[in-house]
Length: 109
Image 1 (cartoon, rainbow, N blue to C red):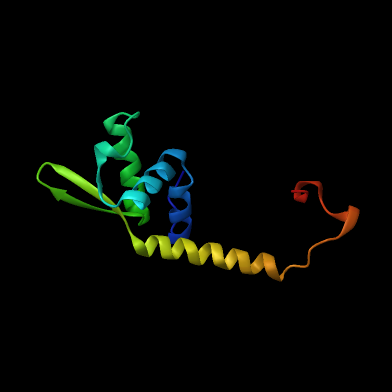
Image 2 (image 1 turned 135 degrees about the horizontal axis):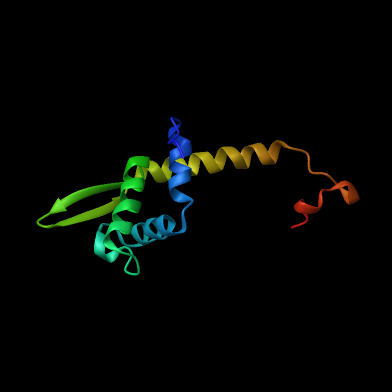
């Protein structure tokens, strides 16, 4: 798949992968962590790939400390994600909600 030129698409696409979402959750909960502490059940090359995708999408920063590379979540990425969710929430709030049987089956939650 060709990378998107839209920064928002890259941000959302990077977070949509279960492994990468797990990495973001760990970083959000604990602050800077070395790569080895982020995903233990994956190979080093797989973890490196996921961290590269997150870094290129703008989700994480990395800093070398000796022989270790420490990763931290970028507050700007979280803020942009919140803006995107907020704009979607606003669009949904503006739409009239169907009533009764004409409501599509997929909206029956």
